Image (cartoon, rainbow, N blue to C red; front, side):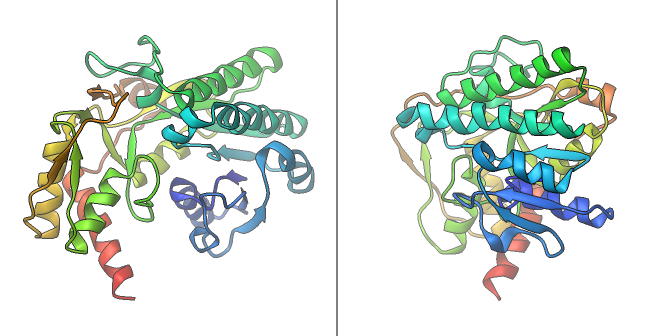
Length: 301
């Protein structure tokens, strides 16, 4: 079962599980996901994790649930914190309870950047957790429920804190899609905008590496792990690499910094390397080239 499997990361996870021979069911409300992203061979169940998880688990009885469904837009979480909490906290509880009824192993997708807040350096899993948005708060609450269920019911669910994920099928219109925005606008000959001075630093990780991280966590007996590169890249540096990859040498415009935008967000992936035998393999430039190639192929039809 892949909740949110009609979305950016979820569709890649579903495709990889299919490729290894699994029967894959996708539960997605299609609020931000789309039918077109669901890979051929996966069965789509249009529904809401808050109301439909229990019945679907009863019908499918999955061995594994990769729980990616979420309200992931920071702006929406600020404007509608109650909705954000309903999806990310209550929805996660419903998934955990459905999983408990059928002995399903859960891999829960969390977030590094929104949970750690402003970082002094690469943040390890035991670093202070200082979320500055309701989204970060709700994801941290979800993690606590996952850990609490492990203690209460002796389950072995795993939480993965993703860094800034990018890659094919990411929507430029959705939160976190700065790379998709840059590439699509450069392709269209449109202006790109950097908010603030561009020296904000982020940990960008290719979606294929994230999927490998999910697979590495399957069957692991609990824990919280960063899935990132540990490499910091400024938005100015990112834009320069995007220009190099696309061959479009258009300088960015600059606009006022956005309130609440952290200056430095980078994760330390050493624990995942030690305990999950996982590490990011794709360099930023190579990952951008793969993403750009996919974008060009889609444009060519």
